[in-house]
Image (cartoon, rainbow, N blue to C red):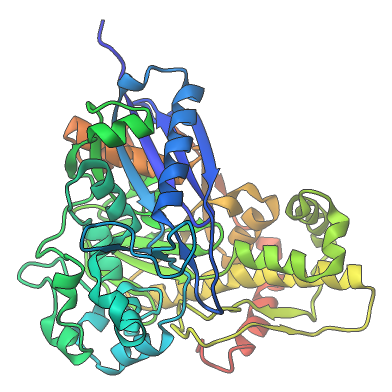
Length: 518
């Protein structure tokens, strides 16, 4: 009888590390998570620690394997999805701390916006890499962040021996082999994976960063998603509670893992009408098709970032679930809704929605920390319009409603931009925390006019990482693996009766941007 083997998906999110054990049918057998610490030394600066993250990964992995009830030796492969945060190591490849403290804060987190001025300098060059970024460099990308270090912390910059995306660092830490994923290099580093492209040295010279390739130990080529990296080292295996028979596969950015876990099984030559919406703390919108499509204000096109044979475009909203958390914290009445305010508000607003628009005159511009897509404006700020003098509790409920609809209308604006540039999106594949909210699920369908595919996979991002691990172990194409898995799907159609309500609200939403969405 053949022994069953298992795969492990590791997801390094903004606030926690998670691990999930999957069988070869894609069934999640055991899952655990551990918190990750965050350090905010000043406004717009957000830092984390590889020491802290490694502890969290080891804790979550051990507990996930225990929850699955299997022997650790039967976990034969793992891969990672991670936020696009920037890890810094010194020349001895030890953590290179940005701030003082016991943790050694050596990661610039993806949401850190300290490099806004540097991103503007990159955009002003008009250089070729901008055609792969929707025309505008984001401060959430790695070259501007390293520019900021060079200009503001030159001694620290000169001490760098390794700079890499968080997921790539984990592969290096676990195997001792330094290979960078095409997903991370293409999406966050200005690397062009097309033949005879690679690094644009003219652009790097324009922004005084020609030394970054050597300083950060950046490679001349990128590894394909799912490429076998190597077995776990003895040290990593011992600390993770696994064995050296476990293969580490080159991973991807967390949003792309979510897209693989939900959209992967549906990708084909006609996939231009599908969009993966990975919606949690922030929201990423990933479409992929065989042809290259340049979409102003939307990142990409990124060949191979999701899988070979497809070119991805990525729209995004930097603050979504976190915005709803902020709204709850901002109003004193937020404390009136118990330990699960989002669940309570979902039920309340769905009941009110049956009678019409719960707040027809109240609207929110949700870009409290800038607009990633489709305006690519990190300086844009949020607004609440239409407040009246009524009870604080009622104001809170209405602002929450307006914020929730605004998040969906931001997605609608991204869809419109993509559809004007070579896509024909009419179907959303929803995953992440928003998928657990009955209110948000309904809003995504009704507010965009798209059908919404709801995966029965309980953790699509972890599943996406596990698919990559399975593909490496089985020497198969990740899409073939994704199509073979068990989790089913439900379909939510938009309610035609809600169209007029959302068309009116969306028109008011667009007015908050002074014609910039036209």
